[in-house]
Length: 179
Image (cartoon, rainbow, N blue to C red):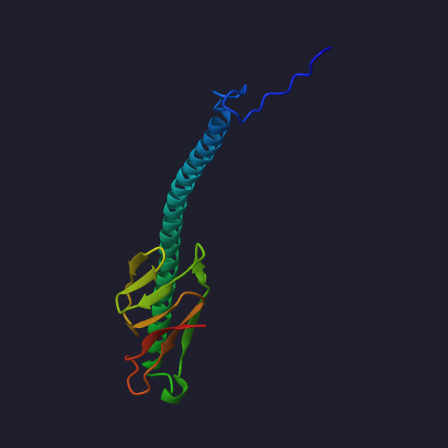
């Protein structure tokens, strides 16, 4: 008669898996793999984030510079038109009632720089453009013989208008406003 052998219990102290620790090493390996992967992914995200921020900062500064120079050039052009208007008002051959001359220049500026809103500050001697995030600011000086009215406005399309003084033909001002 043959005897049927009972299988050994794996959880018992005398079973065939008595010294086996493979289940622990599989779990530890899995956890270590996840931790290393998470650390690598975090490093990549941080590294790429710094590059993206740097590129955004450079793009914003470049766009601000180009836009500031464009607005300054248009302001100086409006200044030349305003001086012509003032010269026409003082012409002795013109009737004073008919010398009501205006000059306006519309400038199409972008509303955002690299996806970031900006502000424009116009002073008597410079145009300043700035953003909050990233913090960037540029200043472009301008030469204007006609007085420029100081103002601060949002970035976007603007109008530069010459506003004549009815009492004094040489006392008009240039005003920059949002369109």
